[in-house]
Image 1 (cartoon, rainbow, N blue to C red):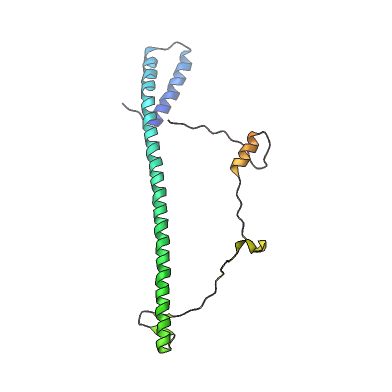
Image 2 (image 1 turned 135 degrees about the horizontal axis):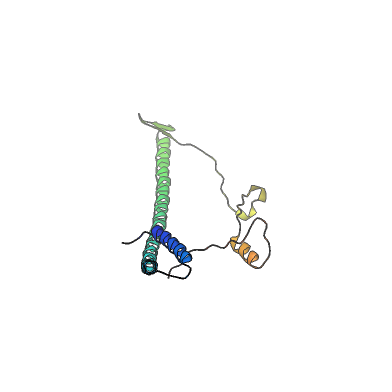
Length: 166
């Protein structure tokens, strides 16, 4: 019977306890259980590696889909701008022909509106008081400093253990 990963881990812990209790005297039942566990473990790791690859592929696919959706959104935003320019052209033509600044229908009213917005012509010339700066920790530099034996306040080098597959 194939065991789940959790069952294999529980079985391993049980076997370790039994081996400690037997103090070097391994009985046939324990030896058979260890052999079975050693046979099942690589198969389970192979299955886990396959699942991990499949999940990574799904992540890559989702990233690609996110990019496609973002590109589609940008395209639609440009379409909104183009349609708005067409509407402005119609309203300007209507104003020239009739002198009226509004067009009214039962479901909408349209008119030419004037708004103000900031346009940046030379970003380098803007005084620092008008700039927003975002900062974040440079983990690469912090890691090199910590590995070199120096302290970085608020940071520590943490060792993590994980499974690797080839």
